[in-house]
Length: 141
Picture 1 (cartoon, rainbow, N blue to C red):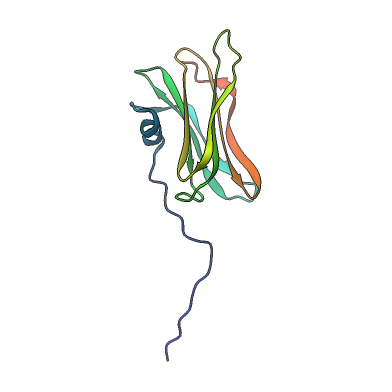
Picture 2: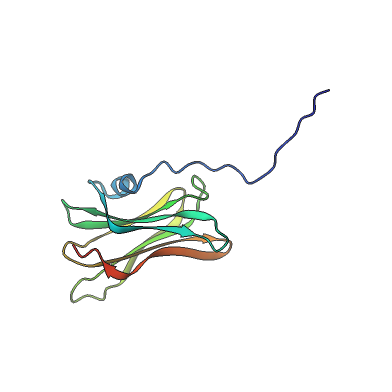
């Protein structure tokens, strides 16, 4: 006599097919490299690995790209946000963001040659925004 056993658990999610460079290229074109101190993992309060935030640079154009790549729920739409602040002399130095209901990543770019950068990303998880990044000035290229 054969007995069928069904395993129940959390649904399987796709692996994220994007790299930080391919996400920035997909959105903005060009060639991107990760900058020093340009990566943070987003870990939820309960220890779940939610994704990663990256600061990328395009030396040809002088633009920076911040991308949040999803780990948890990759392939399924959920609320995520990627943000960048550039230390532009004489400006308000506001955060610029890409936020939405995305399957794999959020990405935002700003011109930043010769300027300092802050970056941050977050995702809605368990009813709360969980995030990480660098909220001090750095990568002054």
